[in-house]
Length: 517
Image 1: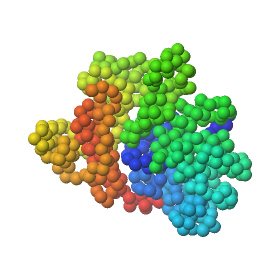
Image 2: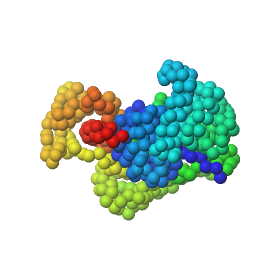
Image 3: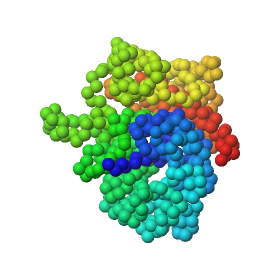
């Protein structure tokens, strides 16, 4: 059986989706779930991009044992040094270096001649090999590169020590037949001990198809993301590639991945919850409607025999449609624990279980029925380990019928309770302004999203905000959860504030970070 390596770049390329930024703690949580999914390589970030990225990669390298931890690096010594230092604690580690190879990129972006590009690539691979044995080289914009030049530069970097060669369709330009033909020509041309990889973007909606055609033509590594996250239109979706190989054994004869498919749905839900970006309802494999049937003809067929309209089982991706445990305020701890296990969280500690059970009981007093989505939201909220510098104690809103909405809040800071009030242009504005007044830190709201976690009038509201607290520093995300939308909004804004203060602490380490490399 030939194995296709799954190279997950959710934490690097996926995080580049607008609004998808994650805190360090969230990245670690996602990385550990990717390990549970049995991803072969986790591209944990771009170490030279920021101290925060460096710190996240370094902590993931300490936590994850069964997947290779990889950092991206431009073909520059300072990038490679940062990558090497960040992944140093990992038992399995890789440096992924790249340079553009298409005529348009070399001329207008790099402003380098082809010979200069080859020299830079060779020097980068040799330098990376001085730190690790496992070096991957990417020909950025390979989809628009000339085959003769690709062969020339690939030959040079293989001689320099690269073991994996990535052929990215960086702008999503290629069609599946073209991508397959390109990979076949390269695989046939170079030694069999070299692994060819693909990294396909979805600008024309062909990323998954291009990846699958590449596998059929000899690629043995695929770079992809959970839920297809990524720049612009996103990347090839991990869940689509893995399940296509699993379902179409007739086409992918003798080819497999080591992915534990039962962890696909829990991983998808975690990434959606952390990033605030939900897959569209009709998204293949993990969308809300992927296993739903509304048409009477379809319903009749499925009831008689599932395979009439379902080519895969929901249970295969970890979506247990047979789970009959319905939770409510009378449910006990044992039933709650069983539900967590059914959702894929069997390794939760006793302390975490007790904390979650208390949160569940409080929620059950307010809701008639608790859905799986509610439990997943509670798990995500409880696992947020960002230091709670500020903590919301209570929130009171005025009647805004007279056109002067106001909010009063009690907030805990350094074991003291502070109370204040503010008037806003709207209720949400008033809520955020009173938090600004108490903290003394003014934020500028860039994005605000609210959605119901489950169904019904008593559904939990999940709020995501993106805020800038300092114009000289990156925007931060915040998440809040409550049956009351205003309360969820206040929690999200305070979470963003705490994330900002945590980021400031990390940025304060910038000098020691530089010195360390």
